[in-house]
Length: 372
Image (cartoon, rainbow, N blue to C red; front, side, top):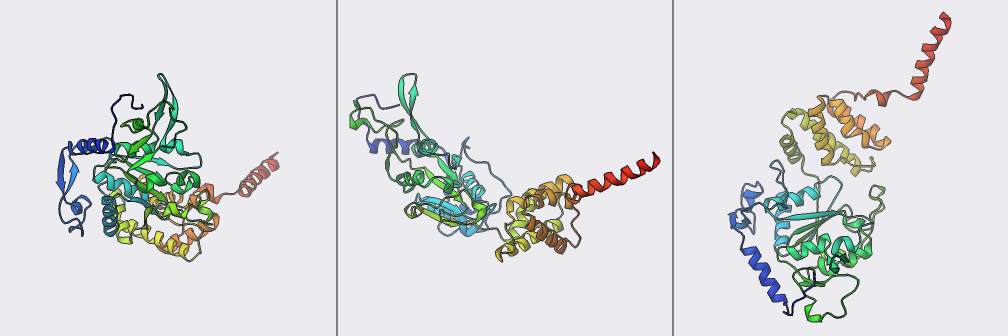
């Protein structure tokens, strides 16, 4: 709602209200390296930091088996402390979104997220004006609501936004103290002094707890990779407003540790060979011998299906093989045999063709004809 009182609200008053709301919480002191499971204090975080004691309903849940990259976490946390907008860039399945969630979960930061796409416009992100029971009112989008109330906002696959939409968010991305919402129309009878309001105002003040994250495969850069069809190259001025971090596959040791924590019923030897297979395939991809890559997300699915099916071949087929391009399926079968020392046994639907069925029908019909 707009500010309908005669009292003029200032930026300083809104900031003070924000600070009071933040400091009124109960905090606990915590060492960063202990929060993230590291052995020793991180450089720049040698002293405890305050973490809200009461779990926020919008704080992401914590996965105790999650394995962090120490250097990456440290640099992201330092960038968060300076209120940078952060973009994680990398291959599919490298854990970009899960890393953001796990960081915010351990810091007990309330978070909301949106998946970008060609249909996501300014209204989805910064709101619009609409009719309410008392007339025209302003409503927030995901991003403006987070900006106003101090949430962490994550925009996944940000480069699937149309470039013009992302360009219009430059003031928020760069962290301006006060931003003007891109709503259509201002009440002509409103005094300009009253455009600033705690809720629903045309101008909003950045909450000190607000943080912006984004994930993307290309980082806003033009790409001819057909795997990322639908992404759009973004304006260089937009990209420059983000601090970008490369999200890469974990080391083999860390991937094995994470998979062991995921499901303890799968034997260590199997997990070791599953990770070895993934790295063999990734090497082939890096040498342009494969069309696609094997993500950690797919490895997790394989482990879960192996525990569920109790069969290495069937679990591999459904978790990895089925999603691959035909040429990559042949490579996968070869690397499977090299890694596990046995030929891949595919289910019947992959080994029986229509021609086989026709031959089976013919062989069944001939004896019947002879009897007749």
